[in-house]
Length: 101
Image (tube, rainbow, N blue to C red):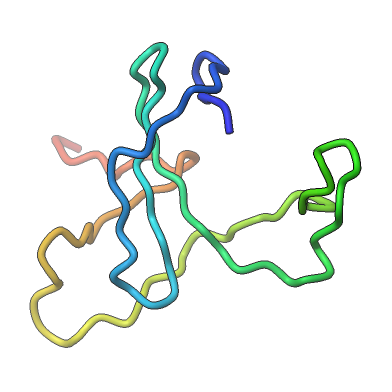
């Protein structure tokens, strides 16, 4: 993995959350520029994986995997768990503007 900002390959994992049974979220940080970002692990169909002789016979994706926004885990009724973000926007969505109209 490389830093999405400077493409440096020395990356460290700052925090990992695997408390929910179906997801792992990691905060990563670049050792070169200090840029931080989040990654998630996702299960993929076994047919999406191939074996690369170029990369020491390790598994690689045969094609890009697309994650769809909109998945919200089932939360217990009432107040969301501490640290849960309730208002999320994708990179293509702007948050609603509140003000004089």
